[in-house]
Length: 408
Image: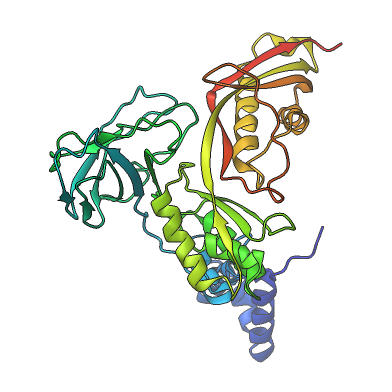
């Protein structure tokens, strides 16, 4: 067993008693007499020393990213890593495209502050949609011949409710609509499947949890020395709302770094991404450095896994094993730094290790939850070929199915 870092209070108390007895031998009996003033001193000293030791221990913990929490962690990140993230929840930014069949209504303006609404739909697929309201950031002029307009909206309230992730096969057109009539009542949302920016809102956050501060501080420790790829990562995580990212270096085939970001809802929007990109370009990249930002879109998936258990007795009730499997599967697709790809073999290994009652994960299949088609493992060419879109494989708890068999 390792020696304790901090000494025991007994060491201090013993030395204090020895010093007093050496100066006045008659106090020895008083120290050993219950109820005497001298007998109460060691108890009082112990309480004082325990408070001091607790403070010292807290200072030791607070000086390490691994153990520091709360306000102490924020102070450590600010003083040692020059990392200060806003503690309050952040506000979502929305990109929206609308069109009108003809330009018959002529020219007009959609004023700044025009209100838009996202109505709640708890039964929406693949995720429930909470209600939110937005306003236009700037006035938008529409010419007499213009049929398509792009709007930038800002949520009226901070938090994640206004986030609207993009999902493959689930159109977002019409989810956000004007709260009042526009100058041309024929304006509606775009129905073009090719246009991923029909309606997308991102950047809202629920606050500043400790892991976000730790990740940003660690990124700064690596990226503080120059305009490198590490600096771009530090810059991304210095924006409190960026919770997931992928950054690929320039190569012989693409002369710029490629970056992709998502918020805590796995949401992307052009308005939010452009705001983050401007911060990176202004403060984190050097002369001649180039970073191109792409889109993060979610692919709703389902996972079917088969298992061989260590004991036949565990087949009676596999409910608790299901909990472990579902948690591990979600973590695999959400918590890895390379969330934009998956390998069936590594998923099998993770599921095998998620519960001690599992002997082996014998098979695993990843399918598109919407179409039922099997999802192929993505090709690893992210750094050699520009990808305008990369996919996050979105797995919900209910989309994991399991089957179990006895040991063979």
